[in-house]
Image (cartoon, rainbow, N blue to C red; front, side, top):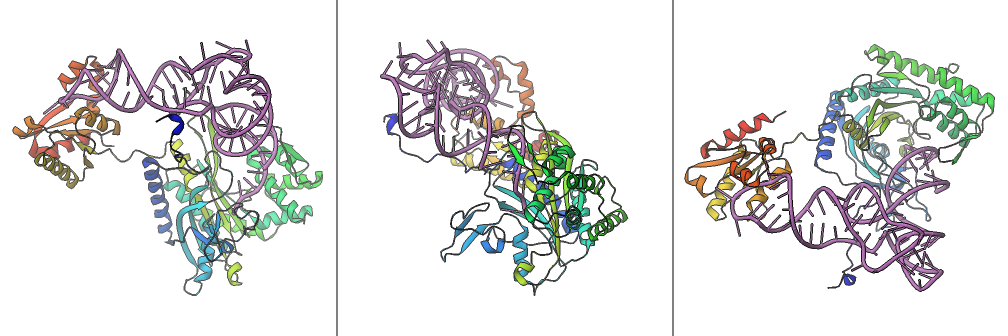
Length: 479
RNA sequence: GCAGGCGUAGCUCAGUUGGUUAGAGCGCCGGAUUGUGGAUCCGGAGGUCGUUGGUUCGAACCCAUCCGCCUGUACCA
């Protein structure tokens, strides 16, 4: 067949912004989620799960129109022509769930859940169109005691994940305080308000000078592209910068709430290095109604390319008193936060706080003789090992070339290969090959004949002692 | 979205002013070796040179286009 006439096969490829996950990452995420869950359960939260799809209008903000039905979210029409969307966070579906079951749910409703969410937008390094969030919310709790509790739970979660005190900080602000700032500078236009809030949010990225530019005319980035500013005058800009520097704005409700949150967390024993008031925290712009909080990692991590990366915020949330009201018309105050699981996992992995190799590779029982009796014996050995709680498998590849079996075991990182040919069987023995020790011993062997002859790190043991002898070898490599 | 950079084998990259059949290292597969991983030696597979169109006698190379990746920025529920 000529090359030009190759059948037109589909290309094996992933949609942009999506990834496959492999064993190490999956186990690491599961371990992380187990720790997070433990904290939430301890705080008295219960799980709830909602589907990946919702009716688009239930998700709220992004209603598809005929021109751009998938702007921001992935949407499609059901066979009854109703718009469905993949959820883009876990909060809107929770609000829908609560509104739908409001007569059966006992408030305050304390709940957590983890799952994938989807965003139809430009992906970047560490930023995907499908990623995992882990949320906790208290619904039907009007007081800032609930917000303070969320902050404490965030801090506890970070420490449960092995992040040391001082390597993270929960920063708290209040949307009402920011509203007070708007009032003080006389900004009423919604668009301009948002521009000012976004500028404040950039404090840790660009510093006060950068924020000043964004509050005023605008700022030019490293590529020479220009970002238009909020258009404040010098006096307004200074008022905002003063606020950001001092955190003070003449007394309003928000300031009092923040003071109360601070008193609550200090009373519970949390230090300033764990939870702290920070005037530059902004979070979701048209969403939160009161306290807002986020958790930032403070350590530098080195990525695969050897570059230093600041991870910044890995969790965030706040009070959203209006979300359930969208459905029911009655105000149901709620507060909660979301952990970016995938992102946090990447940070922990690069920081060396994540063990991605916690599961040892299995013991491989090799196939020497291929008659039914022998295969049955090999399978029995595998079962004996499994019964003793040892991961074990029969070699399932083509057994004709014995060397391939050891190569397979070696490449998988197995510690032990079990070998029994006719000679061993006649003597009631099995050979146990310690592949890890063998690799060491092989360093001094240059000649293949010697290599084969010596059979490094291989012992013959009575077949009856198989499990005990394997355990002995494995014990050396534990931990 | 905007600005800039970059697309050659699975990976990292060479590839002359535009000139025959596009190369290397590593990796992969096979053999030396049907009862032993590694090392060594020998052999092999693998490319629409990101796409499509244009300029040219001739394009991996020049131009346009779209797609993808990277950096910055914007948006971020």
